[in-house]
Image 1 (tube, one colour):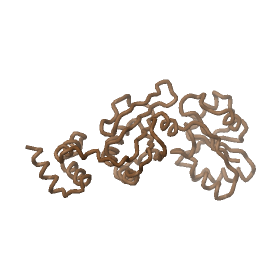
Image 2 (cartoon, one colour):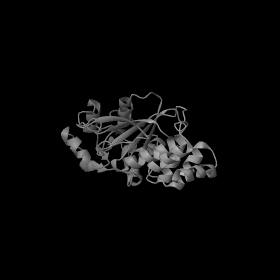
Image 3 (tube, helix red, strand yellow):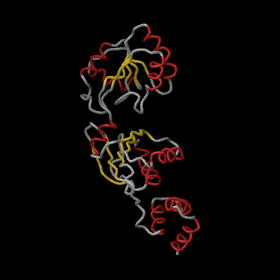
Image 4 (cartoon, one colour):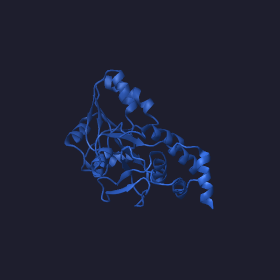
Amino acid sequence: MLYFVATPIGNLKDITFRAIEVLKNCDYILCEDTRTSSVLLKHYDINKPLYSYHKFNEQQQKNKVVSDLKDNKNICVISDAGMPCISDPGFVLLQEVIKEKLEYTVIPGASAGLMAFVLSGFNVPFTFIGFLPNKKQETMNLLKEVKDYKSTLIFYVSPHNIEENFKVMFEVLGNRKVAVTRELTKAFEEVNFTTLKDGYSGVVKGEFVLVVEGNNGTNEFENLTIAEHIQHYINLGFSKNDAIKIVAKERNIKKSEVYKEATQLSK
């Protein structure tokens, strides 16, 4: 049997009795980083062979795992924190196990996305996005796909990307309410409420989950003049030419019309 086991996202006590039992009784454990997982396993006196399993070797590892499952071995898959397969390794193996019609199950537990959603106080339904792509154009394309979703959007964000992610989200999604959650279940856990326009000005440390309200059908720029609209993007750091392009697109008017206002703005 293959077990996908949820592990704590911060506080080591956030693990189920069943998860500990399964981990103690399996033949071996697959994890992202053996050093990280060793801390958890040592804490609960779990002494099982630990093998590295991450996005760079999961294609190679899946054949060995499938072979061992066919030999009736019990194998656990864990990530550094939270639920495997949710923005973490496991999907490739899961698909192979389903294809081979082998037994598998999930041992539930902590999930940063779900916890952040509840902390935000935003309403269901929600759409989990996870991490945005590294390339800006790919990020913008993804955000354009979900721009019209009325559901709450959930994003995982690394600290070094948070400023840029806010900027791109605002550019594509417009101004929306955001719950910025940080260091979930840890000593410095916090939730900050802001907007995509205002950005985040708190401590830039630890892992973040952004919970962004869905499209409520309002036009956040309808009360701005064209000149104010252009200035808004210039203040965000965009060049005047880029600001003109964005404003023309958002207002569905010709760039020449926006350019006239930009000329007046420079005066």
